[in-house]
Image 1: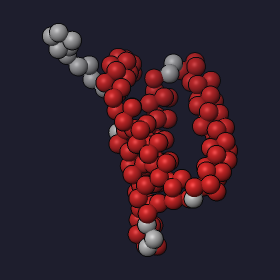
Image 2 (image 1 turned 120 degrees about the horizontal axis):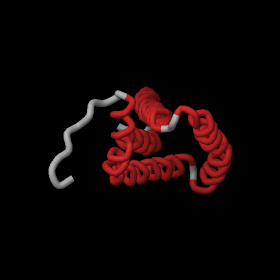
Image 3 (image 1 turned 90 degrees about the vertical axis):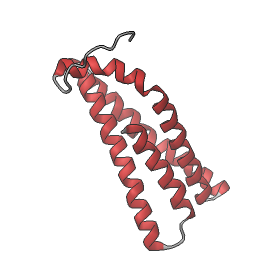
Length: 135
């Protein structure tokens, strides 16, 4: 679901950069916001469930610092970029970045799933899956 949400965010940003009709812009922003919220919520949920309980506070503080602490720098960079190439082109670049991130994550999702599944089975979140031969 995380690659889908990131891709939705990216496509939404690219679409919004081209919209000039206000009601359509609202609809596109709603879909874009949905993609962003699903991506953030999913990432946060996965992170909190795979981290050991005694380290969860530390990991979440690093996650929050990394996320909230880099927003001002990203805003500064995007503002400077929008000044140089225009806001619509900056949104397209942001959307392309989201799509690249979604693609890279989708390529690694099977590896991540193999690492996270035993933790989810141990916590009782998912049932144990029978092993396939040759795997």
